[in-house]
Amino acid sequence: MTRLRIGMALGLLFLPPLAGAAKGVDSSYSSVRAEDCHEVPDALAHSLAEQGVQGQECPGLAGWRLLFLNTDERSWLELRRDGARWSGADDPAYRKLTGPFANIGGSDVVEWRLDEAGEPRALIFRAAVPKADDPVRNDSVLFVVRLDQPQPCLAGRASSNEAARALADGPPTCLGEPAP
Image: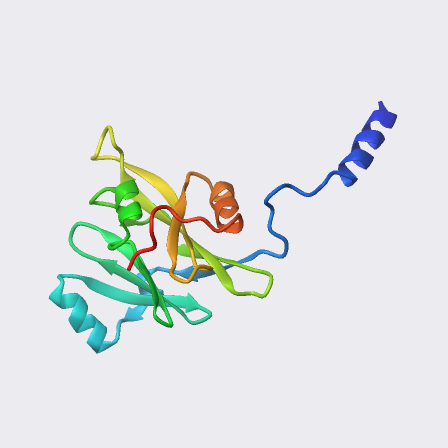
């Protein structure tokens, strides 16, 4: 029995790394709690107010601005950096997966997945999405936005942290076209 355990342990040492596993990938976290965010600049606040939207800017990373935006019915995130932009309000793939009344929630933080150089490659966040069969109740779903594309794009949704990280760390993929 001891020989079997030793043999199994030695065998595990020589297994190839998991396919698709990214080397050197790490995470950083930002809070989206209201008390950790601040008012958006006046010009942006005015533009948002004209659309019936309120917002706060939360701590971003590596030049990425993280906006927490909301109306009476729903809330979403928007990411901006150097002319690149992704918004849950504008991405058809995100809206298709969430329906009209999704809200950011279930976690006070977002997870930035970093590449080997420490640059954000993806953002993972949690949203409360109305259940298809009972819209009064919500499912808690993780969404992954790829940031390592010319324009950020939705990579997909996941039901666990591990699945969301695998999506974020895997080959760059987008659902549909990147939002304008």
